[in-house]
Length: 231
Image (cartoon, rainbow, N blue to C red; front, side, top):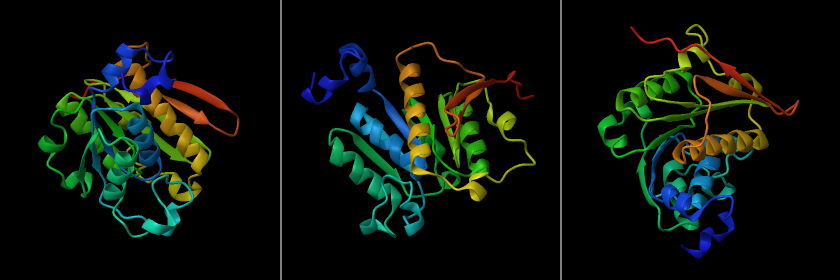
């Protein structure tokens, strides 16, 4: 085992570390959540990460986006994401897609992927990500942030969830009014990573619902749904 992972033990076993090192990950959205998720994935040492984002950094990203610096304003988020990952762990294979999710070739981006992270801030895109994960039979780690609040969930194949979380009439994200804070973003991203580890290491994990995080009151609440099968 490489020396770089010694500090993971005994929280993780060497066998579990080897499982992590075999995983191929797709991260969609490299803003607030995506940056912190990438940082953890790079340090955990997954095998491969595919990155999707069409955007470039601007000055309003500096308050919360880990990958954003004063020196890379106007730079491509996926290019900066690749540089960041490999500055931490050069052994990780990074593949980038500088497109909107809907413009990608889904057969290409989902090929050989074990887990998908939804780190985007657009609800319609979230619906589309979940739909494709259901089609390709791949678990989805969902995350969302607004102000002092966040949501995370593990959405398994044959158990779509997002249309119950987001009513069709409410397609604008709350964060457009509340903004996002860096420490809330980092907490929600960390919980996404925690769900990822529990899933791949076959730990007990709740499904068919989501965790609602209230940072103001230091509370995490599990909200469950009865999964409605698509007709």
